[in-house]
Length: 216
Length: 138
Length: 152
Image (cartoon, rainbow over all chains, first blue to last red):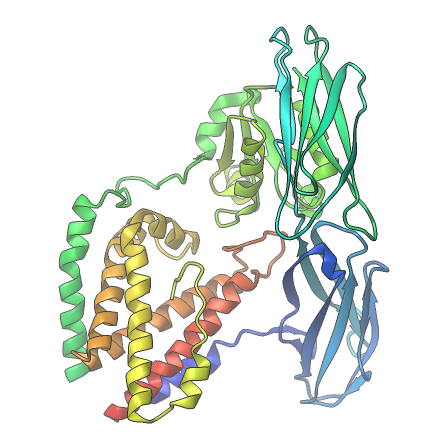
């Protein structure tokens, strides 16, 4: 009875195979906060072929990601690791970076490793959109900005790109809660505005957030 | 073997409460048809609405550029800030929106639909079966 | 096991108490308890479980619906039997069977590239949302295997 259980155990390790290098986890996902500033992912691989494999090139899709390994030649059965470091550089949201690994033995078939990071944005804008129907009463609508978790964010300014739809910023709880009051002056025809919400977050590379107004 | 006999007994015993569940449980799954998860809609139904529908593609840029529902707008989380205003330009209040992602089992369409609804945009539907379903029908 | 959002760090316990009486008792309780817990969670909401089963695209809808009514109770009773040490052999057999079937379903989803728990970035590999449950089930299978040794 024991044997079938253990056969099942070993047969279910699904690894991916590209050429002769077999990577344990060619795609790795992470969740992070902007303050962490970077993520390091390790891609373990084994030379499952019968010949020596020489890694010629490890190329990343952008300058924000660096990838390195200790040596370039791997004998059959030998394992190694590619270490990829992705620096956030103030990015927020879902990021996807690719690392292309080319071997001398299989130049036309590079392996693509993927590094996925979801950089969670503590700034929540609710709703992102306020709208009025043409002819409706032009009453003021509000947008709430809340800062989640331990972070504290200062909203520096809110500017509207359309002077006929005004935005007024007020601080409800410094660093944690803000309110924007939006008032259209003319709802007799379709219009739109984008609000540029300037913040001091993240500190290395402060990002402008957006909200929108429409009259349709 | 003793273990098989015992296993069968347990399996039989479970039939009783299972039967009761199937008949009276308030959250029992419906029998007759494939069920639609909340917010989902079948392709047949959506096509019957015609050109009023605003199609939204929740997949990646790569997939969208390869092929997409004609007239659909790309709207995903990775490039939300760039794509959402474009969506808003096409949208008008009350217009039926149908979001799709790659297949029956992907979640992205639900996430995008939820975000649209949070912003006061409705009605928003998710295409059951996603892009796969569309392709199969064409 | 098709848990929804749970995590169990059983491996450490298994290593420490591998073959002792107390070890077996603990393993039985943990394995049985987990099945009771998992079964109960699904007994509350069979409709959602049926939809989740449908996502694996392995069975037609009617079978998913029937399985959603039936399987949770099998899990529950099996877990109960194992914890209470009644019908222990039958329970172990069923647990091994259930875990194997669930793990194969997960592996099949992985291989076919179904984005089931996806943070859908749109490519062929499923996210770690599928790999972790597979690994967890394998650990549980290991526990079941160890408990079997008593009956060899």
